[in-house]
Image 1: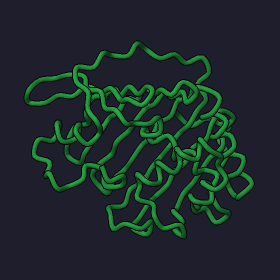
Image 2: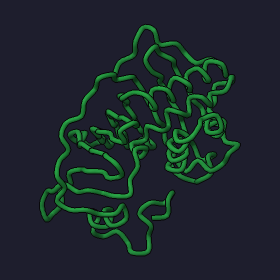
Image 3: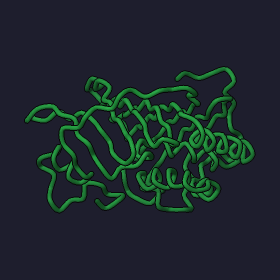
Image 4: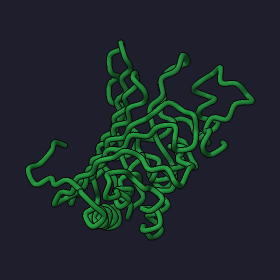
Length: 235
């Protein structure tokens, strides 16, 4: 998903409103493709290439992770459909397909693209302003993404840039401790594009089924019993 010549910088509230409206329309009406790149501190980068269709409650992500001094992992597929995530797991006991229930379409992180409507004239991102301007059920996707990021302080504006295209939007956001939690800074780069006519492959058959908490504890054998596996959602 490379830059295109018609990409135009979002420079103020009117542009942000236009870009936000486009993001909402794409997620509501059409299959979309997205690239979501997460940079955590100086050492971890995770990239997800996503095909998503909100109208049919499904998505397919190919996730690559790289850490400083270590080769990037091969892309790992993550299939989501109707409240369940299917993904391959490789443990000391062997490899298998795991189904994780109690998941939503928005857990692929695509909801953060809706925050583009909160770009302010000074170039910062007022995510809660974008949330107020986004109607349900799309607002749920943005709210879920903000919860994942630990964005608790409604007065916090994040440094950001955005671009408007004929078939999508791009958004870059840099998040520091000011969002409400003393956690390592993280940056997101999101590209959202229309994908009319896109089709999904057949879904794999799971070998085991978990809820989110049980899945983490099954995969990470030494996870402490008294430590939540999902700090933002209190699993």
